[in-house]
Length: 223
Image (tube, rainbow, N blue to C red):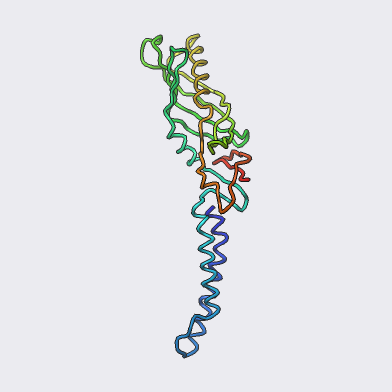
């Protein structure tokens, strides 16, 4: 939103400078006592106060563009939010504990999907030693949950999984376990949760509409 505010306020600033300097130049050519504020200067002060009032909501709603009814969350903002929710773990068949940590967010504008690549661990007494380490890459659609005002991962799908030091049937079986649990752990994970006041301007309360994945962020329609 700061860019849009700048576009609006720059012409106002130029007009202020012109109006403010005009009476000053006139005074320099005349020798006269101090007088009340001239109408032209009063006009300049009015423009200044109006500009300040206009700028205030822009500063309070960074990322929101109420002119185009859109909100854009940057990849860095989304990465920071999802990183705070990790590590996560879940038991499988009472024999395995699958954990995810160090998530890295990816965005695919071509498919309108988000992606999470994370470190994967699988621990089990059956493995007879240290947990198996690896990585998993999951892609996911997105949905908006109106009840919690959260933008969430929806129906994530494990696209790639690699485990260190395991091959053959045991490795394939553990890959299936890891992929299944990773999908369950990421289902419904929030990428961005909105506060009530963020979606309210004056008497207008916005809802979230269409979701568009960009190369460097996620844009949602405000309606």
